[in-house]
Length: 114
Figure 1: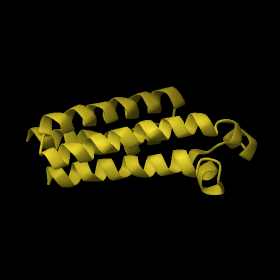
Figure 2 (figure 1 turned 90 degrees about the horizontal axis):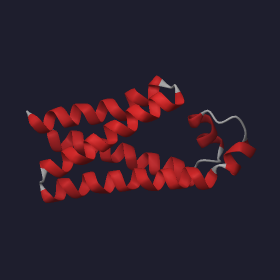
Figure 3 (figure 1 turned 180 degrees about the vertical axis):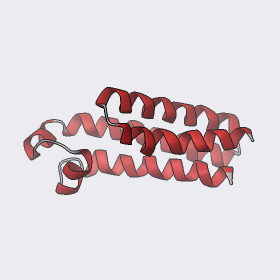
Figure 4 (figure 1 turned 90 degrees about the vertical axis):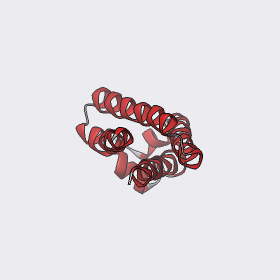
């Protein structure tokens, strides 16, 4: 069960990579992220791509921890995801980020220790 939970978090972060790196300034990306305009999306595309790359690294670390069967490594990356979710929610004042990003990681993290 723990591996499935970790895989779900990894898939979420791979999806975030796709959204931020490739769909940021498309109608779907603009809607999902609640961006104020297409121009704003175009102006911030490079920043979003960088953010997406970091999400990709989190996903890769989680997948690698599954392949290596290393729960300590998984816990490290899940803690990173949790912190990112907490900070993202706090800094943007959007609680939904906490539920979308941090809560799945927290559940998977708890599962690592049970």
